[in-house]
Image (cartoon, rainbow, N blue to C red; front, side, top):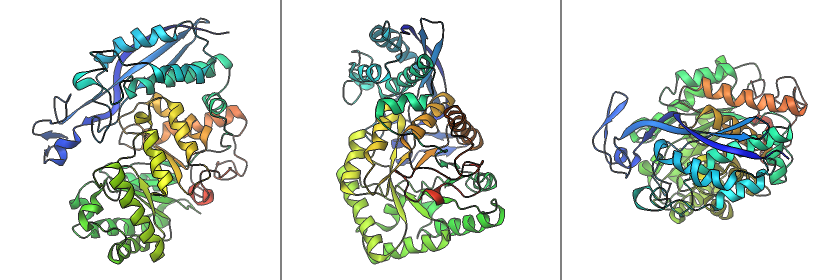
Length: 455
């Protein structure tokens, strides 16, 4: 038996920034890459500040070291999430109560170790009170996220297997036998980065960051024009046979442009315009509105989905706002309020909970998108590649950062390495890995696979 001998924590950098979402929505002005104005969310010193992470080192008694990175989302402290994650503040938690609970345990027992971590209480004064308290009194989600990555890595190392297999054993799943479609995010460079994605044959693109009325258009016309441009460029510069899926995130702005009720004919007509602009490629729209609470959001999303179905408009909608925790995912799926739900990995806590959230979508008409944040690290992104494979998610986010190329490389290469170790690379139908997969969580797997693209 290989045992855990020590747990260490090292402050580090994340792949992007922490942004005070409330301050930005209240009118904080851009100043170059920074923002002018005072922060309003507890814990923030500035409206935009450098992202932080903690590298966790789990030292095993055979001399090997397993790693994982604690990281939190860009908009920490917003929408019911845990508060801002300060590395220096939480290092003593990892090296104190977390280490005390894990040292001496078998490294092979990932499920048991991860469950123990989820049940640990947050220490008073760090995660148990004041501005730094978590929502449920447990360890900050970022700590559970990073330490669970290291525990999964430790289990795979001790058992001489992949993280995919170690997690699949814990969840009772049959892993995918080809790469899960990767979803690229463009940031504000929505044309230049989209063209990079098209040239590389990325299966799902481009995110787009349409987070203001100015970007979407007073009547939504700029989003229509962008999709029209994107579909044209996909046919002009994409690889031969390329069949991507378009996915744009509008951060609730369409709710500001159109307002409720969301099942009315005028809104269905607008989504019909989006569908026409994106043609011939399938389209999914993330976060069409922000209704101000989970119950309200579920009602609004279900209303829109029903309205589109009644009008025969084939556009999928994706839950993001107010869909942060496992319970949130379950509520959206049970209500049939979305075609896809984003599983935001840092907000779920341990990676096994993200895997369980993806699995919850099995047997429903809702697919699971394993997402996360640009503010993660290469280490957490690699772990999420194994979560995606272990659960056969519908798509997985290219992360970290907002430059696209780096995150796409990290996630794509990690999945291919894992598949090669498992004997599934080249994939069952072609050396490019675009065919031959089970389709439990993505019934339209052929189009999601991106034709002759990289995945």
